[in-house]
Length: 101
Image (cartoon, rainbow, N blue to C red; front, side, top):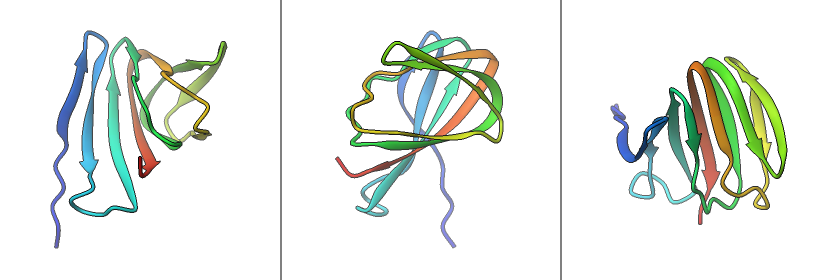
């Protein structure tokens, strides 16, 4: 049985990103957890990602468009989406499942 623990890899005033599943576990995909408490700019070079909101609510803005998010929502972001900005309303946790770089 494998026990996963997140490791913080990026901290900003508005939150942090933890790595949960990395290439040393599988080279097929990766899983990060974004924990936002304010405005958080995700500086990413992910080829694509699926976001699953596990806690809280807020919004994500990318490409000049803003979308509301709440616990239970999921979305797909293509490779064309770069540096989305998450805005938490209190607290927002989003699992980011992405393909290999």
